Image (tube, rainbow, N blue to C red; front, side, top):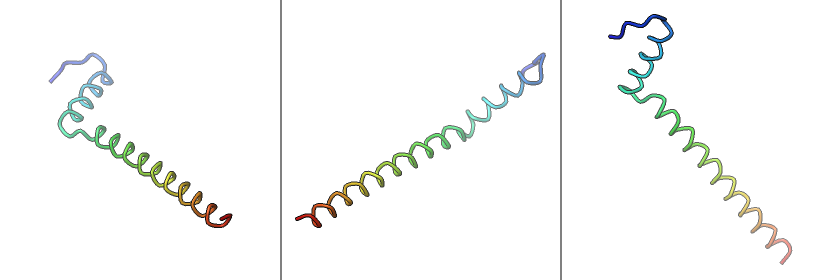
Length: 59
């Protein structure tokens, strides 16, 4: 293991090592991106459906 002068330096190295092993931050980021994409798709679908409803009411 590394011989760090400051404990914080070791913590950063340890964090990088654990991320390399488990990819937790990567998975969290992917999950956030996926959820945001799904939210946008639902919003677009809802908006399109509202537009269809307006066309039927005015037709």
